[in-house]
Length: 131
Image (cartoon, rainbow, N blue to C red; front, side, top):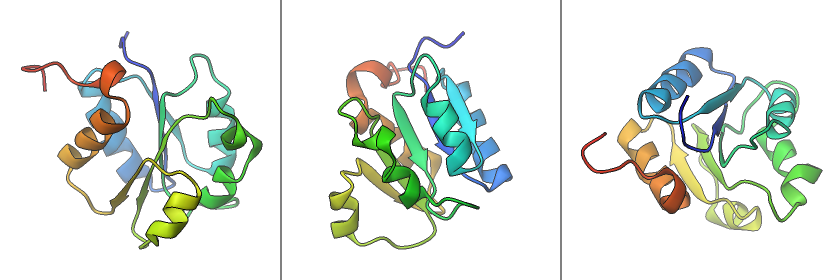
């Protein structure tokens, strides 16, 4: 079992979500997956709680923005969020939601690793020589 805090990957694009989740698992991360904001709500209540959320904005039903407006993200213990979206987002909107990072799709997976290390440096950084 991975010894790192889980990362929640929320994306309705099944192939994209699968690639990202597999890549993360191969690097020792525990991964939770959700294909909608509604499914993400359940994953956010899981134990252990996700340490970070990689969130697409354009989801079926409730959007990623709706999820960010939810009670879960109003709490002080809410996990940091990195947006992964094909839609350009204004930096002021990202700041208004206290978004920890923004990855415009498509992005190299190494960029995701750098974002994780920046957001969760002490708990999730890949030890040298293991990447």
